[in-house]
Amino acid sequence: MKLKQTASLTAAVLTASLAMSAPAMAQTQNTGVSVLTGHNVVDAVDDVRETTADFLGALMDAEEGLGLGDWEQKEAKLDMMEERLEEMETVLDEKADASDDDWIEWMGGPDYSVTVNQQVQTIAQTLEQTAALLGDRWNTTGMQMTVGNNVVEQLQDLQETVEDLLAAVDDTGPAYGWTVDATRFTDAEARLAQMEERLERKAEMTDATWGAYVTSADFSTSVQGDVATLADILKNLMKQNS
Image (cartoon, rainbow, N blue to C red; front, top):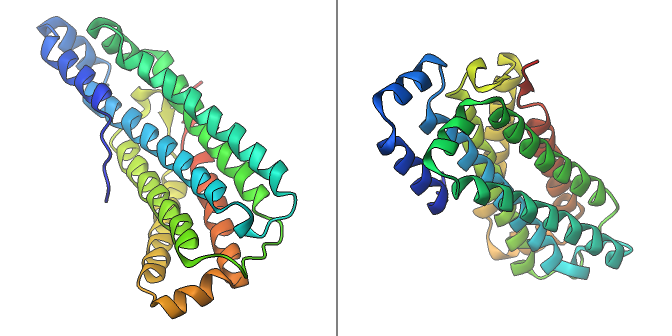
């Protein structure tokens, strides 16, 4: 599993942890919130944001090879969604550049859970819109194998980071400002495991089999379905505490 650590965020949290006085550490423990656990969630969200942007980039790199109608309009929508994800990165960078005290206060305060949940929902909405955009009939008969491979590789990276996010959220609890439905969470883990298995099987195809796959209707159906699944998992991952 790939864990793409964000250097600036990691440095900020490690500095904050080392700089905390005994009273500050006790206060954090009393609220039931771990700064490092909270940071892991933020870092995982940022990884999902990054791989979502990379996936959108792969779609735009494929261009007309996707065989989607009204490509220019769809490309403009993808570009707007990518810009929205870049704006999210700015928010995370601002948090990483804050002082140690501000960082610790943010991780233990209500703004933390609101920000995390908003970011997760923004990514979910982006993937929902992407799935809808990909819902049109594709015609990939002229797609190059390497172009199709890039789309699937980026989708696989996205699946892995969503799985990592679930693992990070699993280490938290209601004190972090959200609740998780245990049954829905277990179902999400199972769906991600099944997706991972399918994508790994695709990666083991021979050139001939892969070439036939990316130019078939199954390619578009599989990609669109996986994107919709990831959107649904993120949309229902957590519920903001009232």
